Length: 432
Image (cartoon, rainbow, N blue to C red):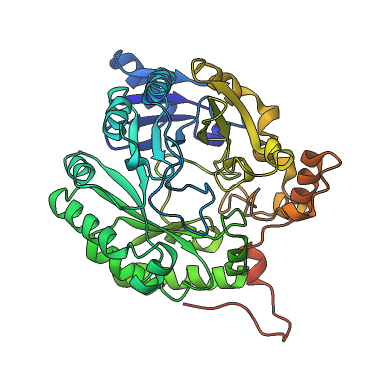
C-alpha cells in the first residue's frame, strides 16, 4: 500500500511511503497532487507544518516486553528474565490506533520481543493495519519464531552482534554460535530478508570491526550500525569502556575501508565528511537534529502502574524505571492508561514536554552556528554530553539539563576533530 504525507519542509514537504517494503520517498508537489487525484484509494495524511516534529511519529520503538534471555552489562533498558510482558490486547489497541493515524513503521523491541508469548499475533496485527514491522532482537530464537520469520515477506531484523566470537560471547553470555546459526538459516530460506547488525562500540571491541564486516558479508547482512556506548547502562563500571571522540573517528574511517572491501553498508550517528559513505535511514530525514522526539519515539510501559510511557530516546534515563524519578521525569513526554490510547496523539503534539529534543536553541552555540548543521550533520546528541552525576536534585533538574546541553558541544564533532591536535601537537587526522 502507498500512503501520502504532507509535512513541514524540515521533514520533506511531500512524500510517499510504501508500507510493503518500508521505504519513504520524497516527491514533488506536482506528483503528490497527481497521485492524490488519480488514485482516490490512497490514504493522505496532511500533518500540518510544524518545524519541530512530524504530524505523527514515523517510527515507534515499541517495548512490548521487558523480559530478556540475556542480562548484558550495557543494556540501557535493563531487561532481564524476571521482567514482564505488555498485554497483547493493549498492544492491539495501539496497532489499530496507529494504523488510523498514519504510522509508517513500528519496531518491536524490548527486552527481547520474540519472547513475548503473543509475538506472532502482535507482528501480524501491525501488518494488518498497513504498518511496516521491523524487529530489534538478540537473535536467540525458538524454532517456532525462526520458522515464522523465515516465512515473512519483506522482513527486517536488527540483530545485536558485538564483534568476533570471543568478544561477543564476553558481552552476551556465549550466544554467538546460536545467533549466527539462526541468521544463516533465515537468510538461506528467506534470501530477501533484510538483516542489520547492531554493534555497541567500546574500547574492548573497537579492533573487531573487520571480523564484523566479514560476518556481515558471510550471512548476507544489509548493513552494520555502529552505536557508541552511552552512559545509560546496567553496570556503571562499564562506562570506562566509552570511546573518545578520536577513537570513534578512527573507527568510522576504518569502516569506510571495510565497506569497500567487503561490500557491506554501515550506519552510525556521525556524518559530515563521511555522509556519502553512511547508509541513510529509509524513513527519518534527520536534517537539523536527531530524529528522537521529532520524527520517532519510544513507547514503553509501566507494569506496576498499568500505564504506557512515551519518551524520545531509549538511551536517556526515561528507559530505566529504577532511575531517580527527579532525573527521569524531564525526559518523559507523558504517560496514559492502557485503555486511553488516543492520548498518545495529544502527548506527541505537546512540544513543551519534548523540549529537550525539539528545542534546537538548546544546542551549543558552536553547533548552532556551524555551517554543516542541517546539510551534512544533524548536530549534537542531546543525551551523549549530559553528566547526570553533576545534577543538584534540590533545584530545577530540567533547567540544569538545558544548561548542560547549551554548554556542551558534540563530543564526537568531526569538524572539530579535523582541525584539532593532541597535546603533543600531532595531527589527529587519519587518511584512508
